[in-house]
Length: 477
Ligand code: GLC
Image 1 (spheres, helix red, strand yellow):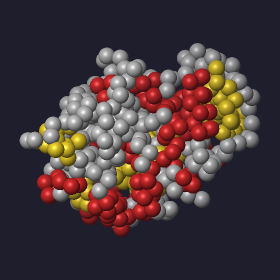
Image 2 (cartoon, protein in one colour):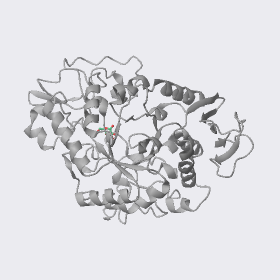
Image 3 (cartoon, protein in one colour):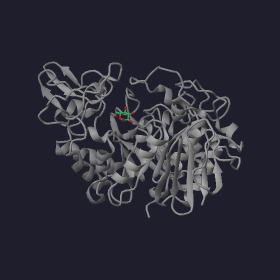
Image 4 (cartoon, rainbow, N blue to C red):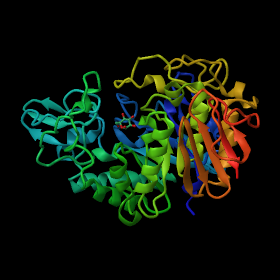
């Protein structure tokens, strides 16, 4: 059985996890120092967002050398030491892979114009960049396409030489012993060769991000992308995990599992992030997702990442505990964003990120002085009352809840899922024959819709009468 079916993935944003050099920016040695914490938490794998050489316009997602470590984060030796230590501790290491674009400072951009999407003439259509503004940048009498920043030109995946060069990048990291890849922006890889305009989005309302004003019909999720997914999976193989980042409707998303399981092992399921925090809506989401999964496909769930507001800010501190129970008791591989296990919230800061994502990227809070760096942290800390040291020995803390859930879930990780109740603020479901979960998504008491012995309450006190406000319970049936 593949480890990742029972496993839990922990996303680390290297800039913000632990600084060992005192420059206020996290680094690989810092991560290595903190691996025992990650192991003790009870997760199975770490995913590192990009650590490669980069001008950092999009904080590592603009890569100038895919096969070199950015000196801000350390050296290749540091990466090897990190991987060796992780493996010693029984942790898998997943790295980010960014195939859609490079930095404009990548040598290819100057030396291999055929590797990019150049158009002779001014911008040929209405395509908009994800971060806003036109997706074409005019240089003299020619223009190039960029799905994200102008400093992130898109590669031309219709060029076989691009494919080979980018598959070599996968092989390079496979040779360095990584256990898998998180593939960035998978749905963006191919664009309409006829360069047709994207249609207007009839549901668009002023004030929403500019990107949403069009339906990205001709720039994302083209059917042919599936051929590349399958090819990539061929290179990554069966023994390493392939996760792909795809924001799409469930029925489109599940296509990324590929025909006969020859695609991604896990197309990231982000739908919990965008679904209203209501029992009916979440219950319907789970049903729709479970029903859409192709034969043999393994589900997965995500509550937050480096691109989206933190769960504690979205649903509040009390419901963040219920959210933790949901994430870790659904059927499928959970991905947990660093700091969510403490209840870290968004920090009100807007300094660096061109797309406004600084609030969810602030430094990990290790103790009441921060503990992330001996210098000045690149982004400010949040409320430092929320920290690892304070929560480690506190039996009622969020961290204790995460640890308890991570232990308990092993008993039913692969059991069937069945909805029992999704109404009046309460979502309840069974996992196999012996376990049930009941979540109160409101602040008011609610009756328990299913009888059983409380194995774990989000209040960490053995459970009360019925469901208390903001309480979730795991029950033995
Ligand atoms: C993905 C990353 C995001 C990045 C973008 C462009 O969505 O998660 O952080 O900005 O791709 O690479």
